[in-house]
Image (cartoon, rainbow, N blue to C red; front, side, top):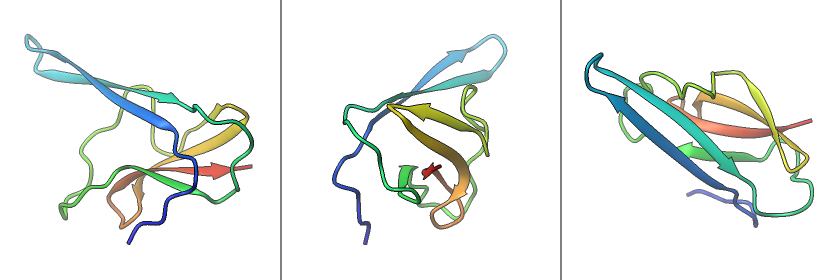
Length: 93
């Protein structure tokens, strides 16, 4: 059972593939459409990985352990969040 905060930001992963080099460049776009400050410790699951395998790779602009600010809220990135293999964003001070 997932309990979501009352306000969910809009998140859009986007992919760009370069066939010649066989690499996938993925970037992450985050748009927070709400107003106000979120409660510290709130976790948003961006990718709910249902397989037992960890997420392979990262978004090029969203490294594991990094933080970013949107609409006055700070978010910490984890590729091992949720059940241990999900991409999550946690509201931090």
